[in-house]
Image 1: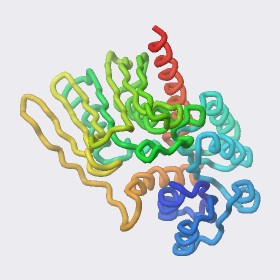
Image 2: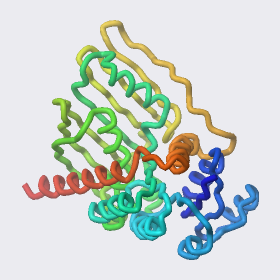
Image 3: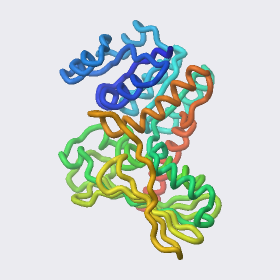
Image 4: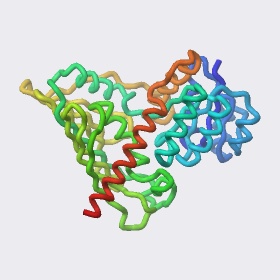
Length: 339
């Protein structure tokens, strides 16, 4: 039985806790976070008695095999480093750290201590995404030539004019690091390595932190695939997450207009006309956050890897690669601005 603790009382409480509690061979023995009434009430309901305010006290007092983190990138670096040195397996949030140096240090330490490490890049776990990946991999419409991403929504921080780590570049926030770390991972998931990128940032005119609220990128991938990616977390009224994959003999469109992980549709366009592909939906449980059913897949993989002492995917290695891309894209934006 894998004994694990959750550190983080936001997504840690409503995302990681229910996900890991539902996994066979996994026992969530403690959680650390601000002891808000909501956290205490929920933990009492599910029978979790060990609630900590200080993560160091948790790691010193509890007999653990692993930790799952849902904290800021800067805090994650500190906590993960401490946990790895104790020989604990670590399931991390994205982005992995504040910068490449920190991410590289975590990966190197994890490899040295031979612990299992995972990270929650959730989108490729969604059933509709898996179907599209299968279409591309078997070349259902020929070779992939171009990929486009259009991701527009209104973030909570921007909507409510809240400055926090999520709106601070130095703390690992911003549309690129906080949100599109997902996008960088899934772009390479569909197409292969990103070779070159040009980028332009859009910033808030209302002074909500110093981080960008939008990005537009032109991309070159291996295998001669080109791409364009757009994200805007200051979109009033328009909500969409759209991936267009243009192939030799057709186009595949993966799209969602009203949710984060739910309700993705697949349309294909070819000489045979337009087709709507049906995929069995991922099923969640009553009264749980929509993301839990997707995180549960990663949680189950992490627990299995820990129990069998096998590598997990995605891991800190993929987290580091995304961190490197983030820094390259920021550098490209500065270069474009100075030209």
